[in-house]
Structures are given as C-alpha cells and as structure tokens.
Length: 435
Image: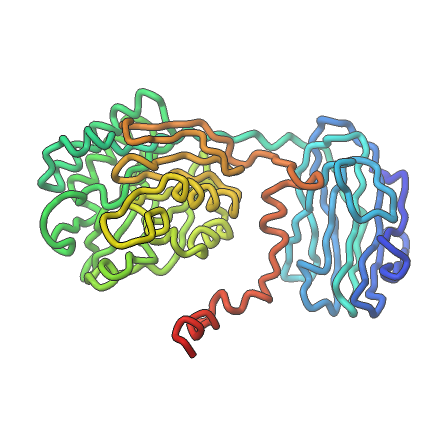
C-alpha cells in the first residue's frame, strides 16, 4: 500500500527534530533541546469501516526512555503537519511498541478505519539525544476484532433473606449460596461472583479452625454447579493450605478450579494479626469471555491493588467485600453505610483502570456492576438476591481529543518517576510519624 503524502511534521520550528529520509527509512534525531517534538507523517487512503493490521518497524538508539520518547500514532482524518492537537477533527489510536531480542522493534495494532484518510505519525519527543529510524508501514486488510461481552451475576442473597437463614456451619453456607447460584443460572450468566469468605460467614469459632482446603466437599459442590451451568463462579472462602490459612477467592470453571487469589492486604487491627497469611501477587485468569482479576475487601483501600490488576491485563475485576472503612460515617460507633462514598470508591476503580468492576457485598446493599466508563449498570439496594448485567469488555470510548480512554490511561504512564510507589518507607510514612 502506497502513501500519497510523506512529510516531516513539528508543532513549531523551534521544536522540530532533525529528519532524514533514505529510500524507505525515516530517521528522526534529537535537536539537542528539551523542546524537541516532531517527526514524519505518512498519509494513506483506506476504506472506512474496513479493518487493517498496521506494522511499523523501528530501530532506536541512545534514547533513555524509549516508550515515552518514541511513539507511533494512527490518526483517522487529515491533519496538517504543523498541528500537535488533534481535537475533535479526527479519531486517533496509539500503535503499541513491541521489543524483540534482536533489536528489531516494531509498533503494531489491528484497527478499524473510522475515516477514509489515515495519517500515520512517527513521533520523537522529550529527549535531547538519540534517534529513531522508522521503516515503511505494512498495512494489510484483516478481520475486525470481535466485540466481546460478558454477562455477570452478583449473588449475595437479599439482606432479609440472608439474615433469616439459619447458618451455623460451612455446609449451611454452601447450601444457601449454592441454591442462589442455581437460581442465577436461569439468567445464563458467564460469571457468578459471591461475597467475601462466603463459606465461613456467620459461622461461630476461630477462622483458623473453620478454614477448608480446595478439595473440600463444599467447594466440589460449586464445581458441580459450574459444570452443569457452563459458568464460572468466583467462590471466596478461608482456605486451609498446608500450614497456612488464606482469605482466598477461587475461580471455578466448568472443568474445575481455574485460579486462586490470596488476599494481599489483610484488614488492619484484626485480620492482620489473626494468623491468616497474606497473598503475594495479583494474578489474572484467562477465560473465554474475559481476563479476570480479583481484589478482596481491604485490597480496595490500596490503589495499587486495582492498578496492578489493570497493568496485568485484567478486563473484569471481581471484588468480594464486607465493607469499606472509607464508606462510613467518620466517627466512633456502629458503622453507617454511606452510599455516595461507596459508589465513588467503586466507580473510581473502574475509571482509573478502564475495566469492569463486579462488587459482591456480604450485606447485599452496595453490590454493584460498573462498566469501564464508571457507569453503574446494576445496583443492589439490599432487597435483591441477585443482580446481573451484560457489559462490553473493551469498548472503544473516545472521550478526549479522539483518543481511546483505555489507551490514555495506560500510555500516559511514566514509570521511571514512580519510585515512591515501591519504597518501603516513602516520605508519607515519615510525615505521619511526626519527623
């Protein structure tokens, strides 16, 4: 496919990098100033509505932060070579950078043309040294990426139903929530999410004594439900694993257990000193419908928990939860559920990470399903046994200058500046200590 125009671009003459062309190689070199921004742009005529795979080879030398200094953008619409702001005139999609061991890197992506004009813009910025040498784009027509949907059911039992139940054992809980899961199957969900420690909730005694292993009969009962309904069930419970007990959430599929998450941030002042062992990772589980990740209750207090899931590729975050200390009247006494704060917390997790959030609260009220734009698509006021909704996994939301929301959230990151994120004692700890 041949470009009908190839020109250098820059937002201002003082910012323009040095550009050189040799046959099908397009070189962009730093101009020695911190203002440097610009490169090459190539224009193509394509068919609106058709899908294309775009691959751009690139070689990069002497650049400190490659992923932020060297970019490639697909702009759907004509844009002058002296414009940096795209605005409402055109859609735009980032091409993703892929490193290879042999040094032959590339930018690539499958995209659907929203305009008959495609401008591929090679970008070099923010570096006073180094260069990037781009090759000609390889543009081939391909099949569109299918829109993916998942139907989620959050199964809690209504507040009245649960508190009227006579629960004194793990078996009682398994029977109560098992019946609700079977009821949920009538709506043909792809995923059922249950509340925190659902097998032990309300059972008297020490949690270390009540914990059960993965092969416990109650767990096998949910495996049977998952198999019969061709569904996945997120089953949270206190798990006995050798000499440790974890607050776990087990993803059960039609063929058995597909993944286990151990709660990383245990509840302060109780769970943290109870003998329960914290988890040490944020796994993501691949399923035919979506990549599923889990936070449990107090995990939500640490913004890092959901962000780690997002960075690991989560598309649906399940959150079994008793409550949240931030969604309460800030005073001593009996906790008072604050619906506005609760919704703000849960919607923020979805917005910050651009994934679907499914919250299962033990008391039913506050259970919610939220889409990637932070909109509530199903809500339990406490009166419902089950809530459910269909959600799109990776919708194309263009809310800011024609760019995709999810692209912006992750591609704007500058990890080299986030040292305090992983410090054992960041400055805030010293400030809290009064030093």
